[in-house]
Figure 1 (tube, rainbow, N blue to C red):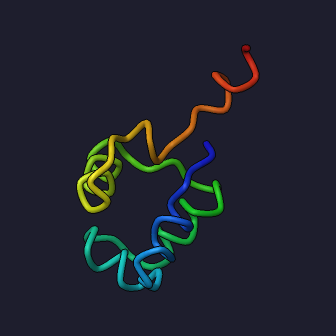
Figure 2 (cartoon, one colour):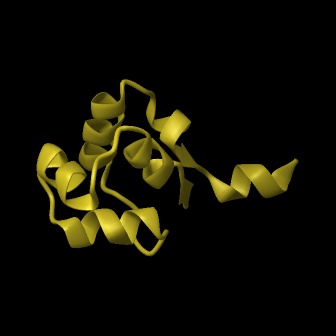
Length: 69
């Protein structure tokens, strides 16, 4: 699943460790999500959306939807 997490994080000058602390996960989890190696759980996706004051859909992009059109 593609996402805008790295761009959103860097816009705020947050490190992966900063975001991980705010979201209550490890830095390795943030790294894996940013690189698309791990899809976040729904609770984590909601926490990230709240941190950035965005909807989940504004952060995470369903690749199937992008190729269907």
